[in-house]
Length: 532
Image 1: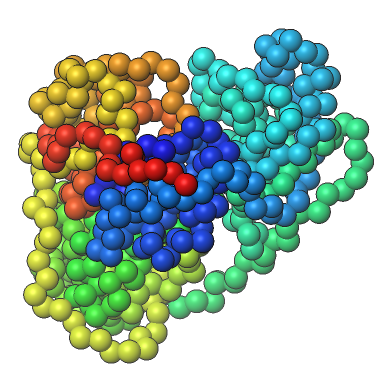
Image 2: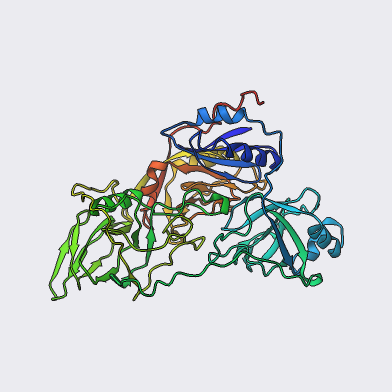
């Protein structure tokens, strides 16, 4: 095992084979809570481990993990799933040619061998499946497709998978299925989970109907009270809370509020639990009318707040203070002066059903309550307990403007050694411009000198964290934010320290970033411990 730094609360365990990765994943499941581990993200040859840094530390965990027995590579068996496939994929003939067999033999190998889900990643419901005897190991395409249809059955390396939704991708397409492997209308959205046993069948030779999980009925919310009516959403207004932590097994990242400090402050101001769902408003321009009296607050990116009463009276109110609105009042947020995202909280919280434990909308996975639209109405929960409001809240960070240079502390790793010495020096010595292509998925950066790699081989997909600085082929960094892919195939040179993530989420386009490494890259102590 190698233990590589990821962040101040995370590290990666690198192993030699997929079997070892699966064995260690199984072993960690039994000690998960006892060792204060918050989440594990298994991949092809690595496991990303996030832990509670208050209760434990990386060195302690490394010493424990290094002693685990990973000789048993048997994965716990899950439920049996049959997937009918129409074998008409664009790459089917090329796959056969690469393997030196016929198309019929490719289909036979794919249908005559049992597959098992090793891990999930890339997208919700995207399952990496392996088979001991299928012998269908093929490389990814040299040039990824811009769009692969939902339901496409594909091969890459030792894995087979089904694309849950239309997306870019570089896997070899051998067929398509009508079976939905991801459906939020089901009680269990993901058809395939780690451990699931899968049998692919040739749809052209089978007339059997295969049972799929039942679809749950949508709740009828048409009669809910209409407490707030949305008049303008600005660039984007989303419901966000603390995020859906612990859903890595389904291939879903954390998402949640980009500025947790502002989320917590806003809820304290109105007397809510700190992680109650709020409205995240990007670059101002929001307007809403209230249909009953309520207490609200606005935190985060600085903007002017205007109130227009039902009588036409107009006045301004301050941020980070409780604001009492009466029936008919209209609240408007002007353009942001600094920062990017402002947060509107309401006493009691918004009446909205969580999706997979969270009310946050993930813009990449498209999971959670949809972005707000003009004319939409929102209901407020009935207040069960009258909690005290806070009158002393202040911003937790200094919100940047597009003219600022923002210094972000970073932890080097896990793949710093994949880059040249000059690239590692350039990472921190030059300024990086935040480009307009940035969003909640990540900040796309541009520098005068791209970062060059010392190792050019393909990196097997591995888990990534919020704040990861991934370097694609063009050498220009992408700083992953809350809605990033759970796994990635480009090397990560470093990660923004957890305590600077709120600041990273508030950096506007055209601002410049300077990365500040808080130490040298080195493996975590414990790598030389004798293994059992």
